[in-house]
Length: 436
Ligand SMILES: *[C@@H]1O[C@H](CO)[C@@H](O)[C@H](O)[C@H]1NC(C)=O
Image (cartoon, rainbow, N blue to C red; front, side, top):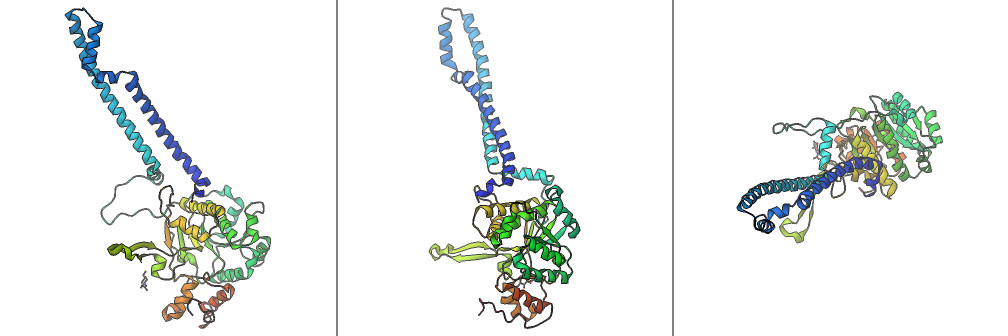
């Protein structure tokens, strides 16, 4: 989490913040300086002890002088006294100003000024409407497309995308067989807006020979050497960096792993109201959409119930991400952390999305939506619940993700046999180990 603060995004955000802080600090310094002038250079302290000492000094200084001088000195005394009152008031005002500035500095440190900045960015401040009518803005505005980021990709996307959205998958030549099932079903469903990011030359050729829209990254782009070496983890970090360009170009991406069978067009089943709309690793209403998970601590007597909010992780192998600032911030945060820690990309993705701000950590302000777990189905739901339920068995999901099981190729083919070719027992030879 600490590494994140050094990310380029955080740096640029941080500089304007510290600029604000330094202005406030400068104002405080000026306030204190003026305070010092009144406190030390002008003898406010001397006046405040007013009467007797001053009078004595005057008497010493004007020894033997007439009563007219004593009359004059009492006049001076009154003048000085009123000046003294004015100075004290001034002093108190300055002290108050300094206090207020200190308070502002404290608030700035707590990031409260961020809210005001956002108001400026998002539009006018408004009054809250009557009870039950208020709604926070959940859909963030999209970024202004920036073609200069990658003109070659921009050209490809112009051709491939439909309504500025598309399915994107990353693949190297180790996974040709899975990818073939993947694009065969995409084609069958009639989806046109999909693109394979080929991580090596062989994969690029494989796609071309199968009329699959492909984008081969420039070999001189440093991160690609990571992609070619194959392991699933480095590809994961790379995935978030590559996705960033798609979003910067102004496209919404439905990121898809390749162990996924498409059975309907997913673009007919999206809400598009959040920065991230993701399939879940959950398997029922509670785990997928969130629940109050109570743990028991008998030692606590009548408060032994510890309540926790719990929700299954999002599956970072299938999510729809809109081109917004919070979305891009999410990608940056995840990519930055994956380059610095040995961590599971999905865990990092979820932590950044869900963990709230606390102490020095600034939580991500991204809107999220969990996809329907029967429509965007993981293989746990399929094998644990659906194949045992006469009603659910008849419902056709939008996709099935073989994320929970080995033998991915066989299971993908079985899903096709079952849902496309209507073979009733196609799913039976692959029992869920947790079930048996
Ligand atoms: C799950 O939630 C849906 C509504 O979102 C409801 O129709 C369904 O009955 C719930 N299922 C169970 C098992 O509670």
